[in-house]
Length: 135
Image 1 (cartoon, rainbow, N blue to C red):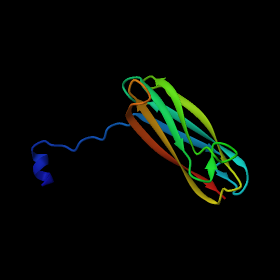
Image 2 (cartoon, rainbow, N blue to C red; image 1 turned 90 degrees about the vertical axis):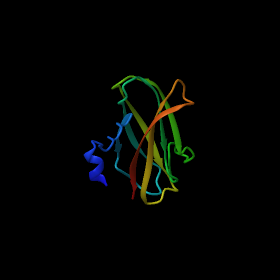
Image 3 (cartoon, one colour; image 1 turned 60 degrees about the horizontal axis):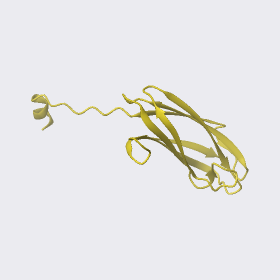
Image 4 (cartoon, rainbow, N blue to C red; image 1 turned 90 degrees about the horizontal axis):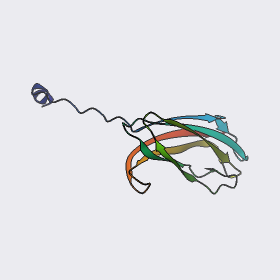
């Protein structure tokens, strides 16, 4: 069947280019279990779209690590404003482990959202995940 479609000039559709590029680094690479320690995540976000976009970034943490020392803040939305084509923004976020942090691998979800006119309307989404080890 595929050979028949190729004979008439039909080609598979190209995958659309992602609206954003997300690059991450984490330092230190691991935390110690049951201790109040911090790791810093550097997120570099680049707009790949052909026009300027209103942009926000959502970082979601699993249970056991948080953005504060107490362990209550598990998600954070950062509104970056308008990013022009090719513009890159770098954000540094501190992630804390505490007394309730068990050994294992923790997956951090990072989502970049492109908005239409205001932050209520989402026009594009790019996701990336990052693993933080706790030993």
